[in-house]
Image (cartoon, rainbow, N blue to C red; front, top):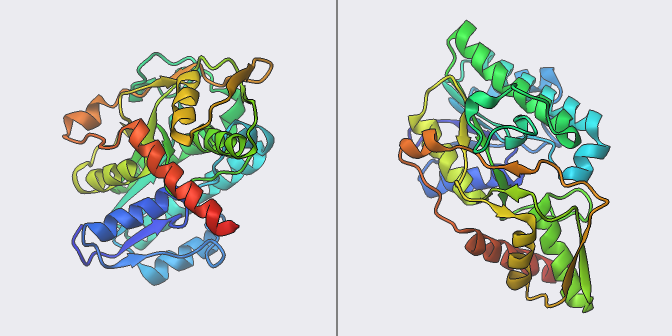
Length: 312
């Protein structure tokens, strides 16, 4: 990519998309194309193709997605499958038809089998059953990966895909039911501190292990891959570090300043027991994350509290 290359970021108002826009601007890219979902519905094929025909971007980052935590994935299965599937199909096909030079499609570590070997290598895809609570989202993301691979095969496109671990940070969704684990915990502990609640109840046993990455690190990885990775096989994007949900909760207590007790509701689901990506291919290319989990949580909590004050 050159400084004046025309770059389209799909999903630029979301957490990941906005981080990619920030990273592009910081690195001197000055010809960015964005369009809010109110004006461009990527679930509608004709709208997507008309947009690409008009704008003719050189490079595309596909960060647009319907996302959520265990609750949202379980309740809105059809919506998560349909919207993510159509976004992938319409965006990738429109990019091919309009002659996009290179496209980066972002998936999720939930594409892997529930009981995949650890750490999870890219070749473990489709070797076992998915985690039922996010099956719809995972199936859509797998389809997006396969679209990139097959468009490379059949049409000679340079469409790559990256599978990040769990992402958190600036611009996260803090909804009290539909959020992912980090923003959900952050809101729970913050509100418990404000209300002086004696305890916070968390889902599951606290034993599942998770890998987290600060969103600005993911954005940096996306630019790195767009400029130096051209392999057809998708690539994992992770830190190589993991923490239990109970350990995360203790860290969150420290970050938010909550001093009460933790209670785990073992009648609620844990989700996948462990999910650590093998990111050795990415690390061998020379990329490493920069932000520690504690540092990232403190940055995210600072933004969260500032936003909460503004809302009042």
